[in-house]
Image 1 (cartoon, rainbow, N blue to C red):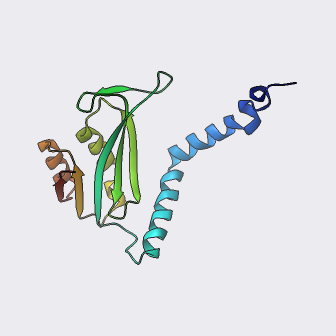
Image 2 (image 1 turned 120 degrees about the vertical axis):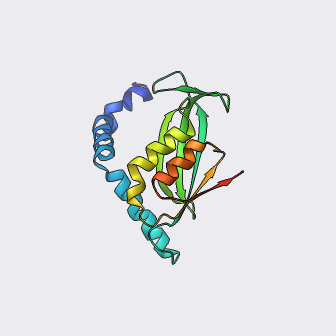
Amino acid sequence: MARASERCSADAFGSIRFRYDFDTWNRDGTFININDTLRNLARQALDRDPEPSMSVLDSQSVTTTEAGGERGDDGEKKVNGRKRQFWVDANGFLLRVLVHPADISDTESAEWLLAAHHHAFPRMGVLRRIRNRSPRFLLLTARYGIPQYLDNV
């Protein structure tokens, strides 16, 4: 009798095809389009303008295992692993997320997010940041014309 691991091999569920689709959709922006469409519909259901005018930028460092992926050491939070940079609207709906090694600063990853995606949110008027007092961050938001405030949370 075959073991469960043999019966449920990786190819049994088409994981190669799934990985190909995931990579393709990630590269061509399908995931971003799906997220934007669902967020806009959810905001309209709440009688809000589909385009957000206020957002929050924060990060979370997480410990990772030895297997696979890039890792780094976030000295401030004493975590060796990855960091997730979240950009959400005032309702908590995800605008964008960036996962990177933990040794990359919050300001640098915020710059990547804003440089790549600020044009997608023309109504954005306020960016709240959490735990980031960097003068470079002030210059960054000024470059994209987004006023920002510091929340000590």
